Each structure stands twice: as structure tokens, then as C-alpha cells.
Image (cartoon, rainbow over all chains, first blue to last red):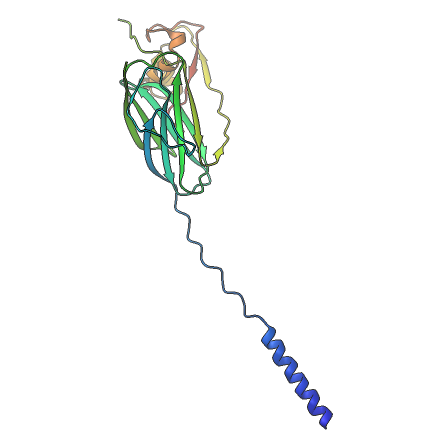
Length: 145
Length: 87
């Protein structure tokens, strides 16, 4: 009888410790908020950009031999997005058109630049920025002698 | 009167980004060989469905066409650029 009581006690103890050892189920992972969609955040023009593709000294007046940079800031995430820059002169003469597919995972800067082997014609120019084919910004600038 | 426009054929462009860039090979530009009776308007109508888009072709081919958009010659090979936002 004594033996049996001991056995029951032991079994009970074992069960209790087993239950104590059993870990509580892990809490469900926190809900990850949906990443913000890609959006245009800014456009700056200048004669140079830094390592983060941002214009060093914004300007809208350029010299005859300058390389002209347009830095486009975006926020948000996209698996693939088309960012385009169309450069025009005067009444709309096409100077250059460039589109790039970017895959941003957060805030990003993209720089478009144009240079010319001969001198830029003086006058008014414009750069128009599009995101996935939709115009999002434009800036006018001037080339002066 | 000749339509004197600045020449931007020696313009080069670059693009770079802090975001990863997806490499997409640029499709080869279409070309068209002028035949007798052609005009830039006709060619624009043929490729873009809009004769008024002749200037896009003219701007892209000034080195071939010269300053007068009304004077194209049979045998000239014109580059037909993609229209912006046409995709």
C-alpha cells in the first residue's frame, strides 16, 4: 500500500513538473504594418551631387559647360517603379529623356544628369519628372553665358 | 524659312540611385526608311497615330533631316523614338 501511494505521488509529481516545463505558446508575431507606397518627395537641381545623390548646392542657373543634375527624392517602398526625367529646351525641344526602374526599400534619392560635349545653348530649359508614367514635378532652369 | 534649332545630339545622360536599380535593357529604337511621298506628319501618323507628333521624329533626327522638317528624302533612315507616356 505504501508502495502504491509512493507511485501515485511520484506520478503526480512527474505530471506537475511536466506541466510546469511545458512552455506557453509563443505570442503571435506583431502585425507588421504595410510598407508605405512609393511617393515623390522632392526635386532639386544643381551642378553636383554628394554620395547620397543629393544636390550639394541647389541652383536654377547653369553655365555653358556645366553638368546639370536633378536629384529626385522618394519615400516608401516599391518592388519596381519607373522614375523618369525628360529634359526640354525652349518651347519643348527634347534634350534628353531617361527612365530608370528603381526598387526602393525606403527613402531614396535618384540623380539624373545631363552633359553636353559642346556648350549648352543659352536659354530656358525644363526638367519634368514622372513616377510610373505620371508627372509628379517639373522645374525650370536657365543656361547663361 | 529654315527652322534653326539647337543641336542636342551630343548630350549624354546618366542616372544613379541610392535605391537598387533594376536593369532593363533598352529596346532598340525603331527605324523607318523614307519613301517617296512621305512627310514627317505621315510618318508620325503611321507610328503614333497622330500626325501632330511629327516634331518628336524631327527632333530625334535633325542630324539626318537637317534644319527643314518639310524636306525629307527617300532612303533616309529615321529613328522613331518612343512617345513619352505612350506605353
